[in-house]
Length: 148
View (spheres, rainbow, N blue to C red):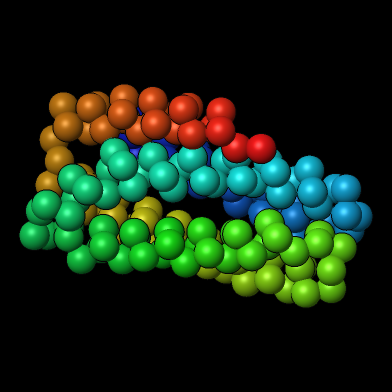
């Protein structure tokens, strides 16, 4: 598997680990700290994929449908993330919404790692993947600096 796809898997695991901690977190302060950590991991990752990875896949007939679905899953994820951000972390409904959010993320990661990775391996060569990795990392680093 190409280094770029390995990098995405690593990011996915970091997000999953934070989500697990959030689902079992109790105190408001702990949730706020973990939620900020989550935002700093998930938002730059999604935006960098949307800028560096998905557009290339939408240009190829074999990968277009899955890439478009990935864009839409990111959109839904972003909407729920914003709702979680606005809610008080001690609110009773916050944890329920967080659990649903984690299910959305799990579903997306599963599809991305099976369908989209497979598509990428069939339509992109190593040189293209190297370029995407470079662009992805640049985008992610720029975006991480903006999250508070």
